[in-house]
Each structure stands twice: as structure tokens, then as C-alpha cells.
Image 1 (cartoon, rainbow, N blue to C red):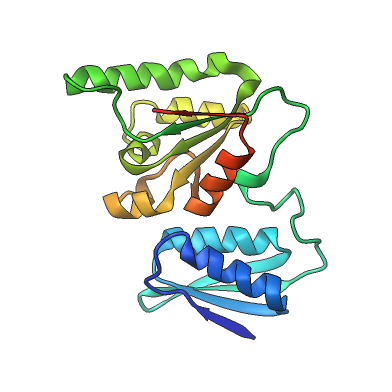
Image 2 (cartoon, rainbow, N blue to C red; image 1 turned 60 degrees about the vertical axis):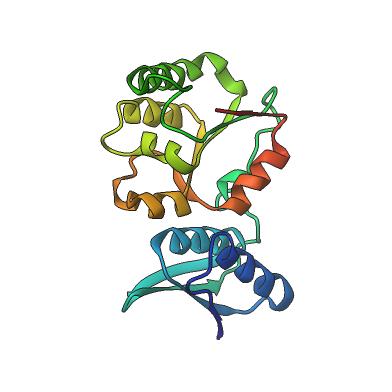
Length: 202
């Protein structure tokens, strides 16, 4: 049993540490110890993508993520991290990164209204809208109290992958309030940027 102590490591260090051990040693069983729920989700998703059956448990203030290798081939499309998947049949792959919950500067009420209108209009991009990524203050748009939470859920149902920065959720104390999207890490976000044909940042 391999054990990786990734406690108190900033994103995406826990995932990178896990990937390094898996790629170099391919352990049959591995346990990764992390300090927050965002890291728990990110490590669990990576291990699943690498062909491990994953379970986790809270131990004191930490989380233990346990992976046992299965017969499933690493990188199987059914389990791969969202940022790595793409449909070759699509046209352009456009990634939209939302870094704030409001658009522009000046009047905050107007900025909130403009951002809500922007999110609701994204569907007009059709299948070219490939990834919708929320970081920093933008993660507030994915929570239960957001005016656009329902719109984001509908976009997910239509096939748009929504990635929400786990470090940002933890920072704002919103991990439990997230309604739409997958909790993700900077490795997934950078990978998505690399694979995208175009990145639009708001």
C-alpha cells in the first residue's frame, strides 16, 4: 500500500503528487491524505481516470482517498477528468473562463445584471461552447443562491462541461453551496486551456 501525504498542499499539488507516484510506480493500492474537500474530489477523480476503484473517508480533520487498481484501462473515457475529454466531431472547442460574478466596473448592480445576461446568452454559442470554467469570485455564480444556477444546470444537461475551482470554493466557504459544475483544480484548468481552440476570459 502506497501512502501519499498531501496535507496542507495548495492546488494542484495533491493531484500532481498522486499522478507522479502512479505514473512511476503504478501501485496496486494507494492512499492519499488531503486536508480539504476540494482536494479530496480532485484526487478521487484523477485516480478514477487512472483505472482505480476509489473510496474515501474523513479521518479527523483530514480526508483519506483510497484507490485500488482495477482491470479498467487508465484514461478510460467513462472516467477521465472532465478537462481532458473532447469530442472530435465538434467544431471549434471554445473555453469561457469566468473570473468574477459581475461584468465590468462602475455600478455593481448593473455588473451583476450584465453577467447574468451573459451566462444566459452563452447557449447561443451552440456546440462550440466546450468548457465553462469558474475561478476566484466567479465561483459564486455556481452556488445555490445564484440567479443563474438554473441556467448553468441546463447548460450541463445540454452537454457543456462546467469546471469550478475547488481552491476558490474553499476560500469563500462555498464548497457545500455549489449547485452546478464539477469541483476541479488548476491542472484540469490548464489542460483545458491547452486543448481549447479558443479561450475567452471574463
